[in-house]
Image 1 (cartoon, one colour):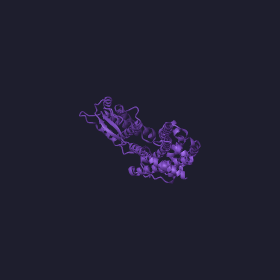
Image 2 (cartoon, helix red, strand yellow):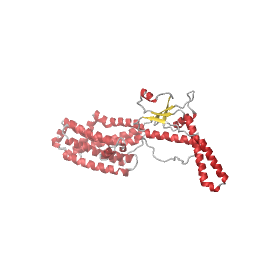
Image 3 (cartoon, helix red, strand yellow):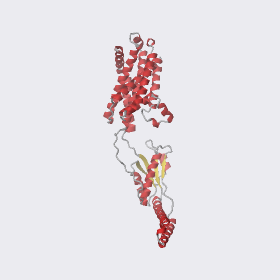
Image 4 (spheres, helix red, strand yellow):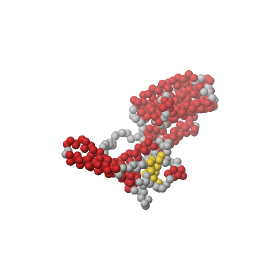
Length: 419
């Protein structure tokens, strides 16, 4: 045990003197936390930019009543940052001459004659509804009415149908110009289509058939950074373990310090356990720093309990063991460091620690589910965010088995005298 403590103390002092080690262990994770939380969870607007070209104007260039009413109905949804285009602007030429890097062009065109066509269509639909109603009454209730009443209904149908013959016409055709690759296209079309339906119902004076009421639901208020934090903690404990342990062994080997240690009575298990202990302590420090930063800067209220700290311990041991294995297998210093990076960084981005794996292609989702980091961050997410430590059982099992196997391999392949 004395040897383990001595190795741990030496490694910790060496790490504290390394500016690069401190940067990649703490400052780099903090920088990424700031970037991700600001970009994906900051207080930016969630509105879509929508240009409106209202071509239905009067002789003075003012929009007609119904066309302006439709624009206001779209604005009232609160989903759009509304901007206007003059009615005589050529859309394709405008977009070509005014490229944008901050938003995608989405242009709603209200056609000329919108007001007149909508008003005419309103009368046409109302007449059709009345005719259909008279037909229904004549068929279903003729047996209960006098011949005079039946004849009166029939005359009314004929009169309305004659009116209908001159009140037909097409509905005004709205056009929404969008980029073919605009991922928001279905959502935007759905919003505007809903506004168009509600606007049409309002013109007809029809009543609601279905009603929808929003009810308050008691739930925990979480921010995007609440979901990022467990993934960041897991990802950087992993990188510190894999890359840190590999780099430490490489540097000690380069300086000849490991060879001198091998000549002492210090057993190789003490060397391995000392490295693991150092990375475990750094993992707890990193967890504390990230949690404190979340509290102070982002008002996060996540608190790691005993389950979370236990999983942090198991994860730190597991991934440090990977670094010990790499250091024991690969003798070349640069090759060992490169192997650590080649394992850590793909795992960090493929495991779902930074974004849900559901957003990945199917084959990458299968890859993520075999990576130990996936179970590490998912376990922390279940414990710290969802407050369901029972759902983190798989994380403990996978990381525990992985740590045990890696530790055994590290002990077996570490040839103390060959260092």
